Image 1 (cartoon, rainbow, N blue to C red):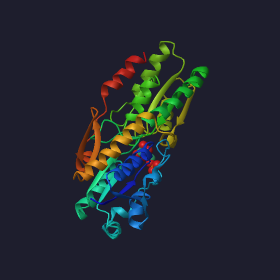
Image 2: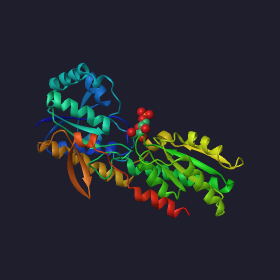
Image 3: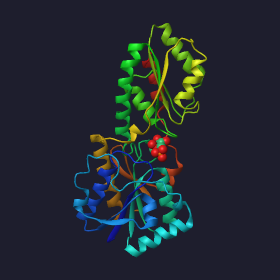
Image 4: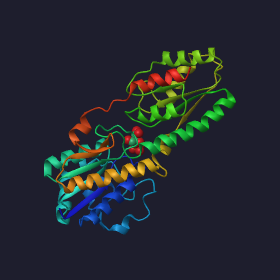
Length: 324
Ligand code: F6P
């Protein structure tokens, strides 16, 4: 393989730059030409591509976001869009791809690979940590620490004012950020999409806390929770508990997607970027590089997309026990 392309796609995640750096520097080391594709599949369709050298990735290991930019392309979901992308790659002589992203990214890569046979290896980049085939995804650790920093600050003011705070963290279909930041932040309850926490249980937890003279409480709500957004949960609670209860809601939103990647994410991203590249060179295709029990593994895109990555429900039990 003489020439490859690299791109980031879907929601950005801290550490994506460290991953791009590993791919580009690894390619230079192995004597392979590498092209950066801007804005994911949108750039592939538009031919927004440039040749990258070792110096193209200088001073980015510590930067959040992605220097290649990211997008969610509707056009790539159409056969016409994918044909344009293929023609552009053909014209450039690109023989293989490294895709850094999440579920949507790998779904696109799998369809494209089946249609046109261009080998693609993925590196899991998403703050949600919702990909089967790796213990952790790039950006998750940083996002948890960003959420935790906010939770710690909110706890100070919650405690000063004897308030109940509902804090919404990201995770469209996944409770990983909620669980980890909730445990580390000493939350009274964590609500996640994977396990229904009925409103009655939230009320019960608050009442039990009051009976033990707890004057403030922090409840973490994952974005995709079945009972609704943090605001909706708070509204439902308000009518069921003491009407004098002082309730506030904070949605952390996209703050969790930005910022300097943690050391853990930079190292993970470097390992996964190089692992994806060396897998591609060795003939891997339509797979995602992941790290399970500290070992580099390759999992077919089909499985990363189709198979659920279950949360550890015992951690939710622990939240309950530790908040008595
Ligand atoms: O997949 C990562 C993620 O941050 C989710 O947690 C969140 O639901 C979604 O992306 C938000 O996407 P957007 O930036 O397009 O609003």
